[in-house]
Image 1 (cartoon, rainbow, N blue to C red):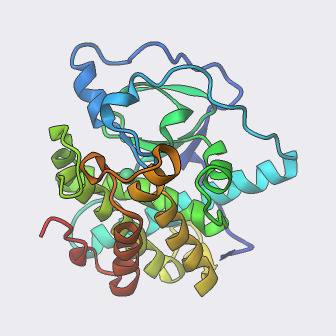
Image 2 (cartoon, helix red, strand yellow; image 1 turned 90 degrees about the vertical axis):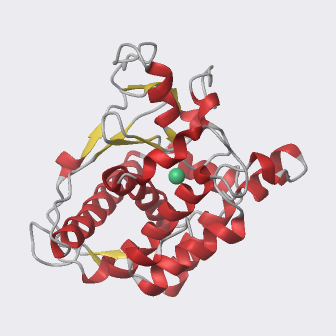
Length: 284
Ligand SMILES: [Zn+2]
């Protein structure tokens, strides 16, 4: 994965609240908090929405990296967020609609959201209440160390693109279908997750041909087969069956919330192969 060396990144699309103290104990919306919490999707871990509000205690400390590596990683996240939104803006325009921007908030440990407080333990998530993506960069280390993914740079891009897939679903109205609280291999919750994987693939397909708003040139200049493999590998690593096998020792499809490793990989591949969001109908 390569980026345009002369890119003019739009840092306003990412808010970094690391280091600052963020009130994590208070929900910013009164009433209906539970409903809002149910709306937060803990996107990659096998946690159900009901667990989101209960995740407590400090997550394991994230290995500290050099400041140079940290800056590089931050820049990469900004570039991917810019690229993903460049694509969806163009796609909406092409379809005669208008894309509403969504910001990514980078945090550590815990964060307050319109969907209630959350900790890093839930993994990256999207909150429809404030239309923001929440990301603790430590998750990318966990992808490798805890979930056994190759964790290459494109694996990170896949995660970001998946979250923005939920933002698109929030605009199309599909996201609401994940809220009936049911889990299981055939649940709407799983179908919503698989569609977000497919949308991530759709972005990947167009990433190197979508001009950036600021420069008129694509932010991503190359995406190799190895990159796509990293994306597929990450999608599979966070499949419900893999996670269950790893952490509970057996596979129970009735508890699935995100889909199996095979399904996640297949839907990402469908999006990438077709480049067409209309082919991401996981509800058929
Ligand atoms: Zn998701």
